[in-house]
Each structure stands twice: as C-alpha cells, then as structure tokens.
Length: 220
Ligand code: GS8
Image (cartoon, rainbow, N blue to C red):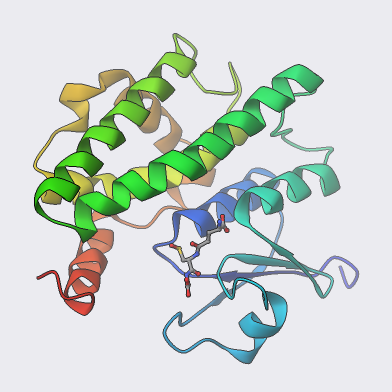
C-alpha cells in the first residue's frame, strides 16, 4: 500500500534490529530491509537518526522511529488488530516496559564485557550476566513466555540476545544451560516460532562476526 511504506534500517547481528524484525513478522507487515554499514554510515541513516546515528531505525511512510523498544511499541499501536504484543492491562503493560528497560540497562553491558574484555573485567561481566539471567528466570516463573501464554513484548526485547549466547559462552567459558536451564528452555520455545527463527541469524555467524570485532578493537 502506498500509504503504508515500511523500511527498516538494520544491521544483521544487531539484537536491537532483531526486535523490530520479530515484531514486524508477528504482525505480518511487509517491509524493505536496508542493511547498513556502521563503519561508513549512509546519508539516509544520518538523516533518519541524527541524534544517535544508530540502527535500527523504523521508517513508516517516510517518518523515522528510533530506538528499538519504542519501535516495537509503535508497531503494536499502529497495527493493533493483529498479534497484540503489549498487555492490555495498564499495570501489566507498565511491568512489561519495566523489564524491557531492565534488559536494556543490565544485559547488554554485562554481555559485552564477556566478549570485549579480559581478566577481572570479563569475570565481573560474566557474573553480572548470569545474575541478570537469574533475575529474568524468576520473572518468567513457570509461564511459557514472559507475556504469559502469549509471546509478547518482553520476549521480543530479550530473545535476540540468544543468538549471541554461543559467543558469550565460548569467550566466557561457561554454560547457560547449566546455570539457567529455565532460561534456555524459554529461548528454545521462542526459537520454534517462525517470526523468531527467521529474524535471528545463525549463532556461528554471529560468533565469526564477534571474532572479527575483537580483532578490530584489538583484544585478539
Ligand atoms: C541501541 C541501538 C544500538 O546500539 C536501540 O535501538 O535499542 N538503544 C538502541 N545500535 C548499534 C548496533 S547494535 O549493537 C549501532 O547502531 N551502533 C553504531 C554506533 O554506535 O555508531
């Protein structure tokens, strides 16, 4: 539809980009994916996200929406007739936003320390990372998804990280399954969904990318 043009400025290993890919797939929205070179940023990316100059950017009918979590909420509001992602109850919705925010504030940084640092800093990152996963396991409880019986907002905020786990475990020398088995069962359950399976790259490809990144930042 001419008045429903959707473009995603994306970068394949980005767990933030994956959030939008999954949300768009859940809603069955057709879009054009424009892969970005983050080391040579396109005029389009600089124009659409002049503040942070980061991907992902969702562009709906020419208008940019920056920040992945805000983009997922936007998608849920605009295409509200299909596959609701946020809970309908205001309190539940506030809780879902809280946990998505927790993932952004706590998980990314600790995970990054596992592959981008060494020694004590790496050990601290690993410890924090497992602690965060344990907190999230507690939130999940015995539910199949963070959204309860339905896959939803918090699941989308979190599952993209899973494709980086192989690299975290290899560099950090630990097993998530041994530390957080419930978390891994949840992740495998999510991976069975078509929207997730087709939005996440292969974990070995991500590992190779991180190897390249480690060389680039001079840690290898
Ligand atoms: C994070 C986006 C981000 O870090 C969101 O959208 O949720 N809070 C934002 N994007 C990275 C690529 S993924 O690690 C990025 O675009 N980096 C380019 C840069 O920092 O120059």
